[in-house]
Length: 184
Image 1 (cartoon, rainbow, N blue to C red):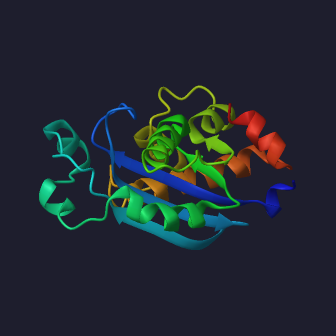
Image 2: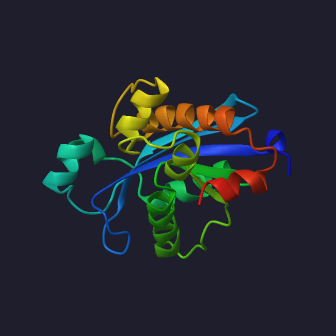
């Protein structure tokens, strides 16, 4: 598939911890992009069905009070699955986000997402070799991106989308297959 024909969703999740088997998603953000144009956004807090650990709140600023009244993942899963359908997932450390999404979908009795995933860490290593770190903060500085909010899903998606766009500009992949091979 030609790269210009693909639709991408830049995605970020905030979680209660680091293990998809025992921790939960507390926020999902996604930005759909086709040919460099934003087509839409999906963002919601998610009730993780447990208290927010202090360490997680310190990192993402999401509190138990903010999550009161937030829908459980099962309630947002159908809309999220529709938003992601037919797209290529783009994420900073894609394995982390996809691992959490798939764990949540399975908890609700659903199936894994049938999506290809592009990791901006691997793309940035190919596009800008030699950076001291490929953490999102460093990539934002290297690619001239600014956060509207850090460690919140949409703010991180906005920066990841800029990193992705700049990697595409520098690498100039012609096909989705070429892009996927550079993101491993």
